[in-house]
Image (cartoon, rainbow, N blue to C red):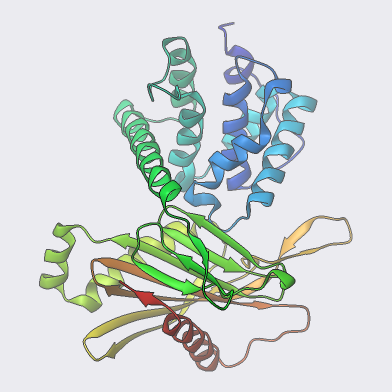
Amino acid sequence: MNKYGSIFESQEVSEESLNSEEAVAAIAVITAIVDSSLEDLDTESLANILWDFQIFDEYSEEEVLEIVEQMAAIAKQEGLGALFNTANMSIIDEIILDAFAAGVVMLLDDKTLTIPTKKQPYIKQLQTALQLENMEAEAIIKDVINAIEVRDQLEEYTEESETIILDELGQQIYQSPLGNFVLPVPVNPDQEGKIQSQEGTVSFSDNIGTFLRIDYYPIPNESLEVITSQGEEAYLHSILIGKYLPQAIFAHVEDAEIKYTEYLKDDDKGYYYVLVDMPKGSTISKQEINNNAVRLDAYRGLLAFINGKFLYIFSSQRTFFDGDIPGNILEEADDIKMNILEFIETIEFS
């Protein structure tokens, strides 16, 4: 048996079943401890790394940490081989790249951003087990390295520019690390208000159902040419429905579906709006009798538009608590849309 045969040649399977996010976390946990021991695993640091993955966009830091600790517990009780086989069976096509990237990021040397020579046999066997071609694997490794370099550059910028400041009335003000917008923080600490910020996105949530999110992307010059040739409506449709929703929602919320779309024109600005039904896709969970957390149903409204040199996608969510019944879909769509537009009115763009 080769050095990693206990993992990749094992026939053991865990008694636990895993979802997609847990499977990705499992690969990260296995990779982090494969040449050390479980006692050396820093679960908080690993969770912070995984939280930057898009697949965990709908999870809080605490929830990602819980997943990591759960995967570590399975590894301790049932072994790395059983955990890997169960994770591998749970990895659908849409997340294979995420799973491999989770392994890559665990192996990269912090200073050189390369995979050390002694780790090469492991990453090669992981690639084979996930049935990735060499070109696919090499592309993922490059993408991970590029993402880390961008993140480090952004962290250097944010160290010099606080994202939360107080105005003259003591109101908390959030300012984008890129300086493209500022807004009054729309949640209150008394209601467990949270601000979660990553590269290119910030969200605000609390314990009474508030969920507001801003995704923002600098528009490259080649996209400006596409907008001119295709038109703004077609471009926003292709980004929101063709790219954003499949990656940010459909890959993570089973049975999620678009219920309503609309293109709005306001003066010289166009907005593409979508309402998505997300069964068990809310950011808010409830505890079942067995103490398992189950996500509530929700509607998510998303509004995409261009302002200056940035593409923005604003999101708002309506969570259905026990006893809540969805109303007419047009009324639900309009209510969430108005909530987003009112939120946008509080923002100062630059």
